[in-house]
Image (cartoon, rainbow, N blue to C red; front, side):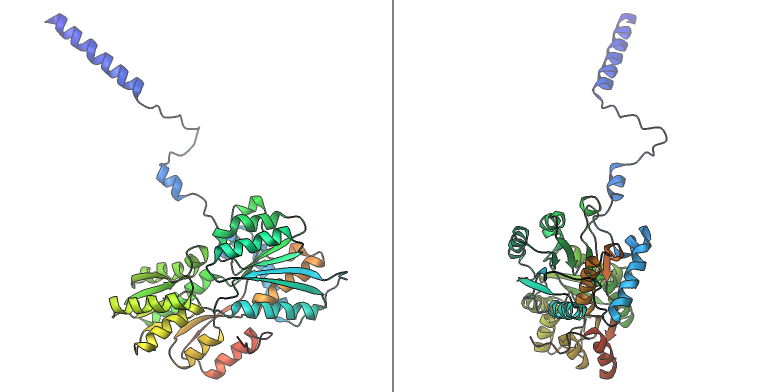
Length: 392
């Protein structure tokens, strides 16, 4: 019996030894290093983009640069303090076939401001629809093979086009201004940032809409979204609103990716109303989706009944607002979209590139359907000071 017990003990010890050998051995932690789980590390990974407020916190001088630019852009143009031997060659790459008038107004204001500076220039335009990534990519290839001094890039989606945009940034003699984005890609801090990101801060607009809409609706009710092209811009505009509205008690019942187009927003709104007739708000990602949603609401006799927002404050939106069919919009002081990059080119030519802010966000004023025509006109006088009445 004693031999049996001894033998059994030896077998158990051997089994435990082999198990210990097969078990994975954890690497020793560095002295003083915190013990973290893999999931916690993933959650704390650095985000892909800088928001405007994160950039300001990391580098307060960036806010000062933007405030200085806004002051200069709102004043009369000052002629350039530099002689330009030949016309400055500028490429425009923008989704010009989009219903939104913001692009066209930006182009008009840009050219008008350069003329006031006395800077000779040549502009070559490369257009596409808002979701045609392939056509825009081919435009980038053309520009990379050509001879340009500056390129204004309005990406169909920044993340989709980032590789080709990075190639343009790294091309000697070519300065890149990214249009319609205020979210620098953090990776480009190392690889090279463009001259600036010019636009209107989409997250700021989303937050302004949330504050007004949730107060108007008492933080209750179901809503649906007519979204943009998936990516950074959509998350800043619509994602910011959704997160805020849900935190305050509203319920999102449907997401429809309308790709920023009128037709898909019209179809999506009809589908939404059929499935969720009791919704209190349809959230639009841009002018085109707002107008598409409004067409469906008018056909069904529900315009003005369901709260509908615009995005940008262009003439179509303001006209619908005066009728009571559209309720609120973040109105961009739109011509800054073109004045800002014109001022930047002047600054760069004058050797003052270090004064250019990385994020150049124009001012946004929230306008709602209770404003009078006179109050709206007062905002338009400044917002459209170069582009005026737009014929499209």
